[in-house]
Length: 117
Image (cartoon, rainbow, N blue to C red; front, side, top):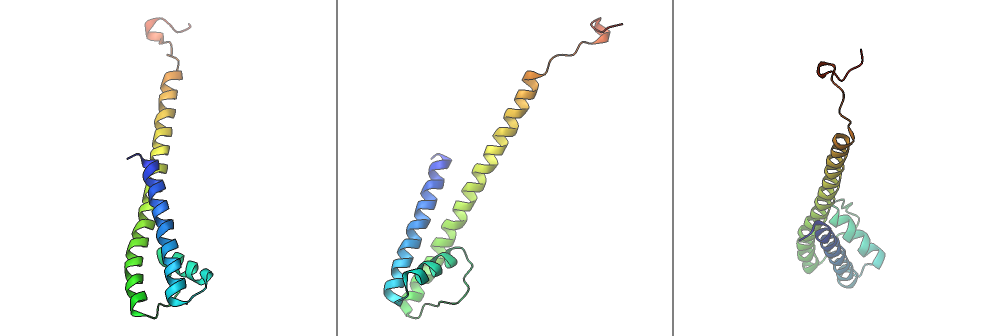
């Protein structure tokens, strides 16, 4: 699968998981949508300030699974983006190197009689 496709897929899955978690916390915990989004994003990015805490057993189990899934997706997305940037820069360096060797004019060598006296 092409790298750009994997990046899009990983980011879309991450957004989908955050949306599902937001709906879950809003419904089960009774938090506002803003609080639910805030908790979902801060958990997915491993910030987790501890201001909001799941209270029910079901929420705690969901959160455990959510932490693993969302953190994995977030880190995977970051790794793919970093890989793309690395490959872009490597390609650019390679292309610049080829341009330098292609555009370089051969110098006249005095030993072969091409130099001025």
